[in-house]
Length: 400
Image (spheres, rainbow, N blue to C red):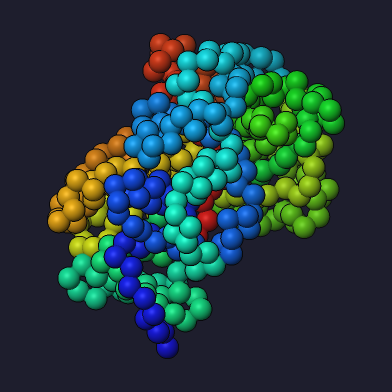
C-alpha cells in the first residue's frame, strides 16, 4: 500500500544533465521544481567520461541557464584534438584542437556539479527510486516510490534515461539492442604509467577502427585514458564473458582483436581495474507520442540513441532548457508549453537519431576506417564538426 505524502507542482524524475538543466532554467525564471533520483547521493558513483558541448545545443542550454561563463572555466584545453587510426595503428587522420570553442570538452562530473550547485538546496531528493506513475485526471499524476510512499504532481517530467518509468504513460516503445556492445576500460595516470597508451591516444579523442571492431578512447582531465572497446556482436556476447575475473575478461575481449597492433591491444591488456560491459540500445528513429496532459519526457527517456551522432548529452541539455523556457513563456497554459516543446524536440531528435544509425554503420563497415575518412574528406570543417561522431561518447544511461 502506498501513502501519498506530498504534492509537488513540478516533479522531475531523474537528476541527470537534462533534468538539472530544466530545474535550473525554471529556477532562473522563478519556478520551483523538485527532482527525484534513485542515487543515494550526488557522490554515489563517478560520472566518468568527457563530453563535447556543442555551440548550437549544449552551449545554448548553458546560456539559458546563466552558467555559460562558469562552464568555460571548466573546459579541457586541447580536448578537441582527434586522431583516426587503422587496425595496424597507422595514423590516417590527425586534427589538432583548433581552439574554436565549437565543441569544447568538459568532464561529465564537473558539468553535473556545476548544474547541481546552481540549484537551491533540497531541490533534488536523493535515494528516491520511482517505481511507477498513474494519471489522476486533469493532467495530474501520482508517482510511487520504492519506499512505499507516493506524491502527486501537476506536471510530471521523465528525465530518467533509457529505461524510463515515466515513458509508459506516453508510449509503449522500449529500447532495442543496436548490434553493438561496448567494453569500457581505464588507464590511470597515463603519461606516467602507460606512456605507450598515452602516445597512441594523443591529447583528445582516438578512433582506431576495423571491420566490425574499434577502440574509441579519450584523454580525461585527470590524466587518465577512458577506452570504449566496440564490437559488433550478438546481444548475448557479453553474457559469455566473466567480468568478475578481470584477466579472463581481458583475454576474451582481446580475442576479438587478433591481428591488431599491440599498441592498440594494450589499451585493454594494460587497463587498471575491472572492465565494464555495456550493450548499446536505442529507441526507434523518429520516436514520438500524442500529447498527454500533464506529462512529458526529455533526454534519453524521449529519444535514446547510440552515441555515434555525438548528441546525447547535448540534446538532453537543450531539451531541459527549452522545456524550462517554454513553461516560463506560458505560465498559465502548461499544455501549450508542452506542445511547443515537444514539436521542436521531436524534429531535432529524429535528425540526430538517423545520423546516429548511419554513423554506426559507417564507423564499423568492412573497409573501416575509410568511411569515417571519407566523411571528413567530403565535408567542410564546420559541417564535419557538426556531425563529429567523437563529439560525445558517453556511458549509456541507466534506469531511475
